[in-house]
Length: 277
Length: 276
Image (cartoon, rainbow over all chains, first blue to last red):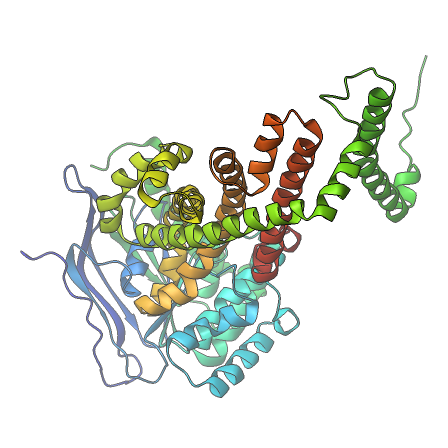
């Protein structure tokens, strides 16, 4: 492709189940002008409607960059990312960040309302929607608190509520639980599972935890160390609904083992600081 | 020979509330007692002749001089004149500084165009501009107010600009992810993120304003607290000087407290009490 800065073009498509929600075609991303760092190279990926896809890979493999392209925050240097949306949600995509996601100057209520204000949702309707999401995430008692007074887990609940309040057709999550301790992480994973199992929205979830990816995802997409390429794209053969107990199933451990054997070389490659062949 | 280390609660662990209360009371008492003790020592030293009263009048003498100056109306006139210059200059200078800081912080092009120029001017001591202002505007209020405004403008501008450029990219990214327009971005992210920095700037520059006006009144004018201090020197009177110095100190304290209180009121989310 001769012209860089290819389009991120949202198109309106028939909403048949199983139809593609996101298509990533031949995407590459280079940073810098001279001695450019190649973050992503030749990435092709299709996410179907209602599918929960987890992206895993070593640090710096470009998985967050890829996610940001789906959100329209970054543009590829080559190739294109298509986000198909049919207008059923208030916005095509919404995103949950690891940190800096929620605004410290807004109360919990105002944070959750942010996306609705930006989308121009009428006042009364926005208030109703916000109240219902505050309740669903157990935030009602903290509605008027400022984020600085909340624990890390509560802050990520606010971030999730803010993203879900706009009823996005695709929900994008960038290592949302990475900064939380192990117990809290488990609790929030279960909450996310329950929320997702209730409405089956399309989700792309970036994580560096294999266990998290298997527990939550329909598919786990493994990326290589820089330059990020897709190494494997494996379905998770575990039935829904899942819960914390799912971790005990033999298939869980088997898949984790399989994914880890794929990743081990990649991780040690970045660890050695050796340049990829 | 053997020994056992015993770790048991003391009074502090048994009744933490009472311990904390006692500690707070002690700290408050110390805050009042220390200056009081200094004043008493000063008073005794002055009255016993240990220090010359001509240069170091006793606190009670200063208070009685202040009483005389209030009754004759001199002190209030001086205070009024100084306050007017400070307030007008401070408001104008900080508004312009905040606007410039915001504009340069938000626009890389504006920064490229004006930053070197303003940085060069920043290092000029503003008091050095007073003769020039007097030459241009003549004697009167204008050069004094303008000097305060100029002195306030620069620190406000620099602090505000630094504040805007330091807003973490993550906040902007989060807003963009929800499709925020430029106006949304300003209203929901940049402006609220900028406000705490503005109050830091205001707290700094209100002190600068008072510092500069006293200096300027030394040199020019026939009213104001600075003028009174300087004038008392030429009359070899120490007592009104001390009154003037105390009034300036109180004015500084009052203005800083006001700005801080206003910030606390307007930005509840940025207060240390609301942080974990």
